[in-house]
Length: 78
Image 1 (cartoon, helix red, strand yellow):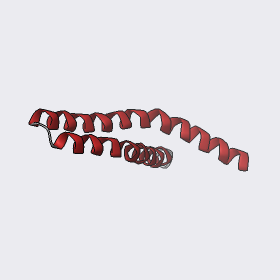
Image 2: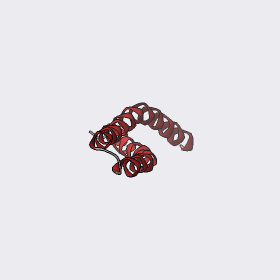
Image 3: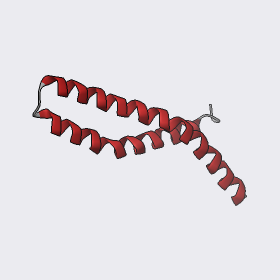
């Protein structure tokens, strides 16, 4: 369990970072489409969930490479 904790912590940090970067775009899209019909609102909800899915998928390889990078930095410090 100790071996997997750095991956979980790194993944969580990267996921939230990417999520907050993409959140203003999703909110702006929602504000723009709020004045339109119901179909646009449903599309916007799907768009926000798609952004969450994309962020989740992008976080996985970034976590792997970040962990390798952090391990290399720690080894260089020793």
